[in-house]
Image (cartoon, rainbow, N blue to C red; front, side, top):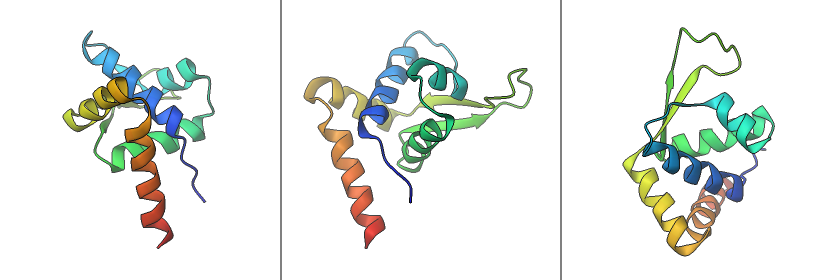
Length: 106
């Protein structure tokens, strides 16, 4: 069974929001290093965010770093969610996670 990590998801969205304005490329490996979480936990969080349309992951074929081959960008929908997190706390993401869990349990 997949686990969802609402606080990690929120932190990833806020991190991507911050990097969106400085035009830095964010790779999967950057998130693993930044949040000091396992690759599988980060991957599950990114899969959730991708399935909801909050981020896009693009394969980068010529990376020297073998641990990360995806560039991650925040979509406009993800930006809205990250702005809501900043103004209201973690509730928007927690609600989305709970909705996803309810849908999968049906």
